[in-house]
Length: 69
Image: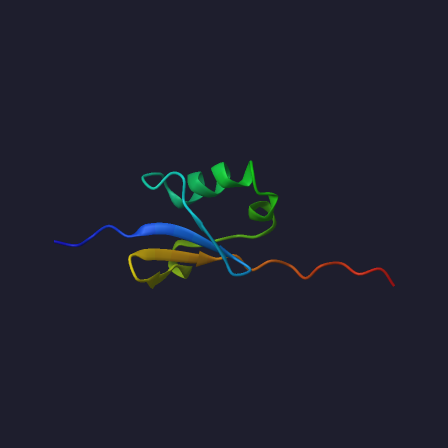
């Protein structure tokens, strides 16, 4: 029998556990974007998840910060 992996997100080295483990990836991201606007600035795909221990971790690739000048 296969074990269900816990979904988590990596934002610049900080791991955030998914608050809705039984929801779809899109529903989880929508929920997290309410408290963390960084989730609105990127697109995450199911196939990008990497298994690390008992977690399926999705890395957020954020745009570079804007600089004045």
